[in-house]
Structure formats: C-alpha cells, structure tokens
Length: 139
Figure 1: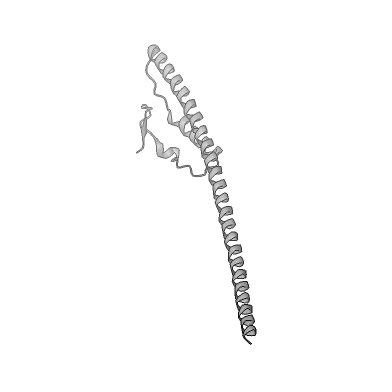
Figure 2: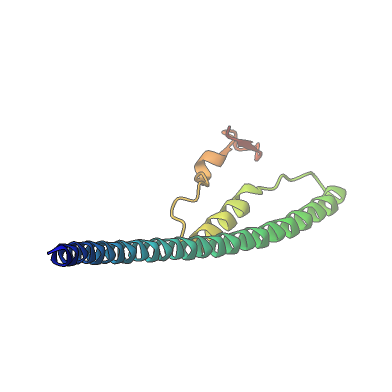
C-alpha cells in the first residue's frame, strides 16, 4: 500500500514537472520570438537611419557644390565690377537671382518639395523707382 501511494505521488510529481517543463519551453520560445522581432525592428530602423544619413550627406555635397559655384560667380562679378568701375559708372548686380535658382535646383534634385527655402518673392523686392536698380532684402 505504501508503495502504491509513493508511486502515485511520484507520478503526480512527474506530471507536474513535465507540465512545468512544457510551460518553460513555451515561455522560452515566446521570448526568443520577441527578441528576434525586436532585432528585426532595430535592423529596419538602422537601415532607415543609414539611408537618411546618406541622403543628407548627398544633400550637403550638393549644397557645397552650389556654394563653390556661387563663390566663383561672386568673385567673377566682383572682378567685373572692379574692372567696370575703372571704365565707367558703377552698376549694381543682382546676386539673389542666381543663388535662389541654385538652391531651388539643389532642393529639387534631392526630391525635397518644401526645402525650407523661402520663395524668391520673399527674399528680394525690387525698388519701385525705375532709375534705382538696387535690391531691398526682405526680413
């Protein structure tokens, strides 16, 4: 009789242990799945950030090229202004037109619809008098 009771007790313990082992395995599987899911999300986020970084680096390179072009244009116009000042009356140049065009072109090449660059009409206002060809910069 004692042996039968012990046998039943061991069977109960064995069943409980198997049940706990099965629950632990299920929990382990769920944890592994959630870890893999988080890892995949992190990988997606990392890829997105890397693409964004590359895109912004390209945008910076385009801006630097535009800057160099504008510097060259500025130098050329200064030299032209110096040489013309020796020859006749001073003439004022419109720099904003070329700069705005290059900025819009750079923004368009990057696919930026709203690049934060205000439209030309907000940057420069022509003076109302026909004899005065200077520009007033809007603030």
